[in-house]
Length: 201
Image (cartoon, rainbow, N blue to C red):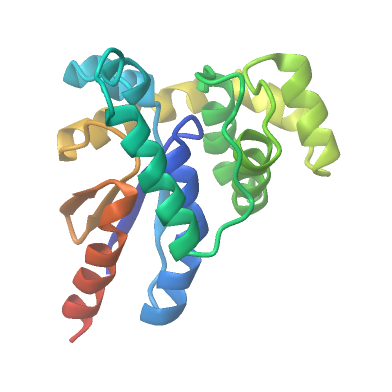
């Protein structure tokens, strides 16, 4: 079964989805394929903007988003989450790092640790010295990853992932695909699970 999770570390909702995905994998017996994309590139290609922009000046909507997040945290018993005080963070380097980590066989550890440094113990993960210190703290191969971020093939792969995501229908993150069918937003995770189970039936 083809189940994809198109993610960018800059999206708190993608992080929260990441914390719930293992539960769905355990219940369904199916694995999600993580696809690193650049959210800024998706926004540019689709003429979309981040909620930080779209909610500006709208009375009550931002507050409701906070209520919705609190409910999600409670529903899934999530405690490892804090708003990043440096938000929005330019994620270009760390998303390139994710592509490199896939190629280097360290993807799971890299994703877990970078998400931790973004949303559990928030740091300004768009500054090279901060990124290096965070990776070192996590016991990851700092030099290899930093060099990998500059690899032209890695840069191109992230562009291709992002373009493919838009072609498939994405306009933001988190976006999920179950055998090609699109589901957007962390609130659609129950529907994603239902679709997986239906496809298995």
